[in-house]
Amino acid sequence: MNLLLDTHIALWAITDDPKLSPLARELIASPDNFVWVSAASVWEIAIKRALGRGDMPISSQQALEFFKQSGYRNLPIDAAHATVVENLPAHHQDPFDRILVAQALSEPMRLITHDAKIALYSDTIILV
Image 1 (cartoon, rainbow, N blue to C red):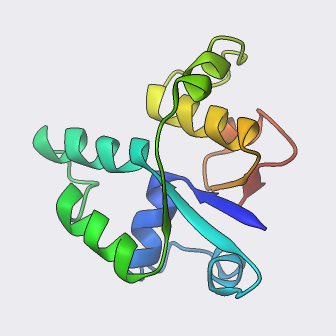
Image 2 (image 1 turned 180 degrees about the horizontal axis):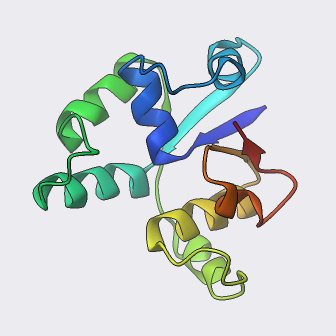
């Protein structure tokens, strides 16, 4: 299965944060799954880190390196992904989350998130 990690799930995974649920850990560690991180997540980390947000424990460059070392695949943002955003319901206003949903729906991939608002978009989204 192709799994796309929401930004906070990806950060929790590479920093071994106790907030990462056992289910998320199991899905990420399974050899049957391909784990993907979107360029949108790296961009989100960069922007929020530059703004001094305390919820970004590492820099975007460090995150990118950790993602590579962990064997996560990189999902670029494609123009076709951006067009899907236009038709998404207004469950969530965060543009990073909306592009992640669009990517997951259009690829298709299973998006893993801890955000209940994101899970409203589709039953294919895994809420952990």
